[in-house]
Image (cartoon, rainbow, N blue to C red; front, side, top):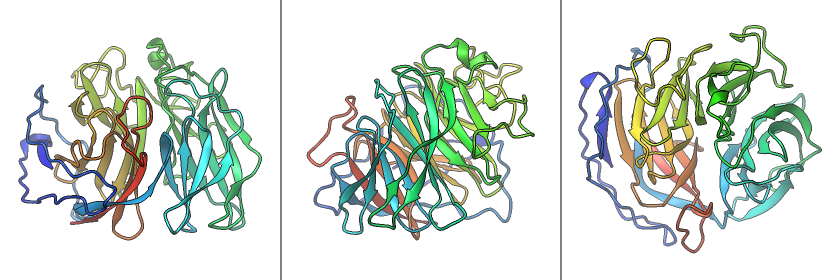
Length: 380
């Protein structure tokens, strides 16, 4: 772990040392002390600290392997029952994690047509009137990206998913920039990240669903308080792939840049985040700047998790986990070049963090057993 940047010029120090990975099948931890190739301007936090904010947390000890043998995993979904589902992009499978660390096929999502970065992507869960509820899936079909929901059947250890019900179709799709993250917000609405599908014009076009963060009811309708009277919640995005809410109910999103800057954005309804006119911090009137930016070789951010008010961002190209303390602005990175490409991260049971690698996606260097799901303890 090494500290990078802090908002408002605050400087943090750390004496945390990372030990060798204790799991025999896990790669040895590697800690880089190199400085970034390009300096990052200081950024003032737009998330004010409060006396009641949860204490920031950081990883403690060594990540351990929970499961292995995943094929291009994309989204980790932990259910209230304690069960865990993982989507696989290219197989269209939803895998269930069993208590002994083995995996079983819970369902194959019908209609998925893998294409480059497209395929079966994000998962989300909505409780139902009974004890089962719905699993939502964002995926690439033959001509578009779409969202469906499927009733959960069976109990933990033998979960299944029923026939899909359409929630939203017509999201632009391509071999890249598909977005794909799904999350239910504290307001009960479903949020989805949609990339520009390789067409930069989509991002500034309010008539397109591409290059946006979308907000909808659980059945795909437009909420009455959406800023434009459509599903568009914010726009000017290139390829956002992470969503998380802090304890104040503020929405954060991670986003792939093009050649220079990847972004962490604080999302405001109706705001324009600048793509393709601006990449990173542009200080340009009319556009909302990111709260934090990284050079693209340090990040390529995908999944985003909030533990209290500490944000954890899984980096693919950067092969590390970024930690952002939203109360002080401290930014540091963990597990640098230790496990390869990191695709998703979620809050785990107890005081843990779970993350999944993505080394089998054609851009990584998989080792025997990849891809893997890891768990690490977190503490103040």
